[in-house]
Length: 353
Ligand code: HBI
Image (cartoon, rainbow, N blue to C red):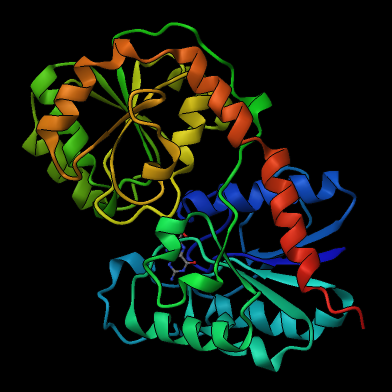
């Protein structure tokens, strides 16, 4: 297949602003190239990925949808990078068998009927706005095979769950080394922004006085500063936005990963990264992580927003077998298994002209 991937307009690939969708796009490129498909990526200027064919597009990035309210009108910045990306796609579409959209934005959905080449829409978050839900639902009505998500929990947040293909996610397990034992440290991993509720993990660290290592891009500086000021005695260390190689080394040395999503996390790639290192996951029973973690086996699922239950679960970490965590990652979340599902979906959309 000749595949054209259109990235998120919120930031350049490898900036970390795109969060989990950056990892998904990177993995898709690797997996499809392994399968001898031709892959080209259209992304904002400054995007860079190892061994990927990236077409960099100029223009202004979009406001992250999760910072808006449900009825915020759709905005198109002047010289929108998204508009420019899709103008490029319009011009070259006949060179490709399928286009894959990763933008969580109004335009690509609206454009679907105007394109001759099939557009596969991969939705990377749960429902965030009424106007986006509406344009997606209208498009899904006409193109019911063209919508895929990570999890059923994510699909259920939209008015069209019945047409969503749940592809789950996967990671390159060869990049993650299993560590059979760990120090008495906790980890938190992800974009540092309100919807991820880092403050809950910091509070749990403050209560237990167990060191908490924090990894990820600081997307909201004020939010981060408020947490630091509110919990001066919490034993937290900000480790930065590390490469996978460095991240997995540090993460694997932790006794558990804390996941505290305030929103319906579409998947939670960080959960399978932890499991791949043998690290149990303690998460709010909400969204994607609730479908990834098996309570009592690969970690613990606690009542959403209950810090007391986080603390109780932290005391139970020794009950989890770290080898089981790695085994589950290998059985359920390898790139091969995920790549097969994604490839089958794309193939199903190619209209042999
Ligand atoms: N916001 N407007 C907009 N468009 C996106 O593609 C987008 C976003 N916010 C976050 C985001 N993508 C990714 O970080 C998540 O899909 C993972």
